[in-house]
Each structure stands twice: as structure tokens, then as C-alpha cells.
Length: 78
Image (spheres, rainbow, N blue to C red):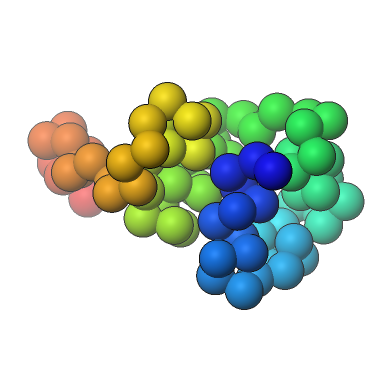
């Protein structure tokens, strides 16, 4: 099972719920979960912010679920 599916199921959400977060169809989101398509950088960022985690966690580069602190440059653009 891939990580975006694990996170969605942990929150008791439906694919259509995450499709709305990403502003895509449920079918497109399903393709991401099934590994048929890859998420864009923008999609990865949106999911990381939604789940309050890191892109590294979503991509299995770490098992640490905690999000990184926001960067200094991000704070200046708010």
C-alpha cells in the first residue's frame, strides 16, 4: 500500500475528499494511489501541508511523520 493511501485511510477520508483538496477528479486521485500516475510537485506540497507532514515522508524518504519547520523565505512571503 502506498503512503498517500495509508494517510487518507488513517484520517477516514475518501478519495473524493483528497481529490477536492488537490482540485482534481476522484479518478485522477485514484491513479495516484494506484501508482498509475505520479503526483506533481504542487500536489505533493498540497498533500504535505494538508497532512502536516513532509514530502520526504510521502515519498518514503523518511519514516518521520512530523513536518519540517517552515523556511525563512516562506515566512517572508506571507
